[in-house]
Length: 315
Image 1 (tube, rainbow, N blue to C red):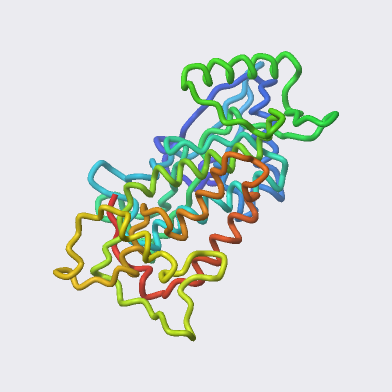
Image 2 (cartoon, rainbow, N blue to C red):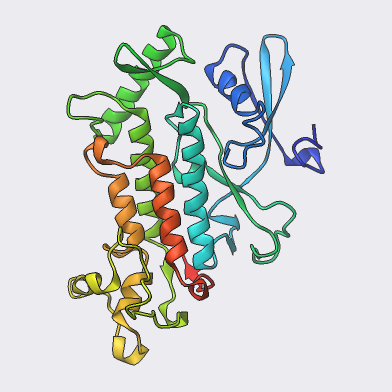
């Protein structure tokens, strides 16, 4: 088991006990069967199962919170690191949805990272030790199909579904927020996943700042487009600058306002913000699919100057 999970010591194991008839067990078995387990797009944690009577123990590798390896070691240090986090999360959601898995928890606390053999006492060097992100807990996820015009979780019995619906209503009452899934009130688990991940990215990147001083000036010549037509160009964003209280002296910092607007990731109008805004559109039918969101993001990444990707970021 240690070999299958690529572990050297039992202390690195995480053990979860559940009933043999739990719906989440069926999902874990599905995601850890071939060819799904070896699919590089699968960002579900690799799991081994140990049966004991009527109970089953799910054994996984202990992973780090994505924000930090330890309290003093941040996991994001460059713009490339931040973008890779977004790419992997979109890739994972695309894989889940392509295989009818939805209602994927995307809260920051549910995102974990595997740093492999990287040392934990020095800042993480992703060039030498690439990081992989995982959706840690999929207990609330399900496999959804259209049944008589409605989305149904085929992993759960009617009784289980009723209990889940009651729990969801209670959570909505506590939060005092309700995201309507469509104009006629139909619940779409796939559109909800897109919305939830968009909110998570918006919340995360409000606190991610890229140091513009370290970036070379953008090439705004006619032969070079920093962003594809689907995204606003820096020229289209210049008006946004006058409505943002940046509290920065551009003259003393010798900054180009195009550059500042492009790389302060939390500013409205930034291409990444444009994508997350579409993911959180109030009308679910207007949100992109996970696959489409990933494609748009990859276009954005490919359009960036590689020299900018090593720019430091701070949380």
